[in-house]
Amino acid sequence: MAMQVRGEFEVTMTPQEPSPLAGEAGVHRMALDKRYHGELDAVGKGEMLAAHGGVKGSAGYVAMERITGTLQGRAGSFVVQHHGIMDRGEPSLSITVVPDSGTEGLVGISGKMGITITEGKHFYDFSYDLSDAP
Image (cartoon, rainbow, N blue to C red; front, side):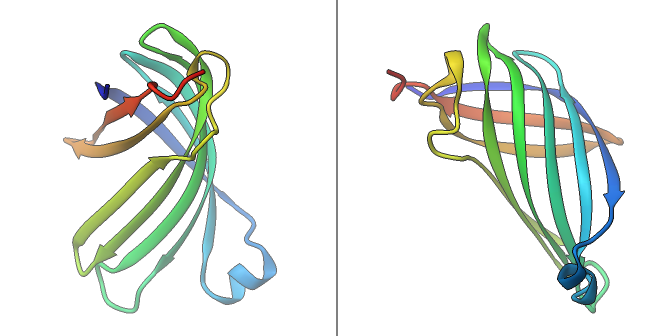
């Protein structure tokens, strides 16, 4: 049975030195530090690779993020994979739980997360399922 939680989060993105190949390709690397509030009370740590297109409003990014804390009272961690595209100002974003990445009380978690930004504040909408938990 799918569950859904929503809340606010803060994010800090810190530029990192690119790998030699990524630097040649114009790919930027960032460290992600997040703090989730609400029924997902957790911290997120990850790494992002991003590149801008040749047209204003076009870009893409990928990221891996480990989220550690409590989800509706269940302690543990899980990893999400981000895939974002901005096509001449039209956004597309997919954030999916990596299969079998859950630990402790979150073993067996699956799900998808959405992000919205309103008036400079970041919000998450996380639909998840723990029915495959052992």
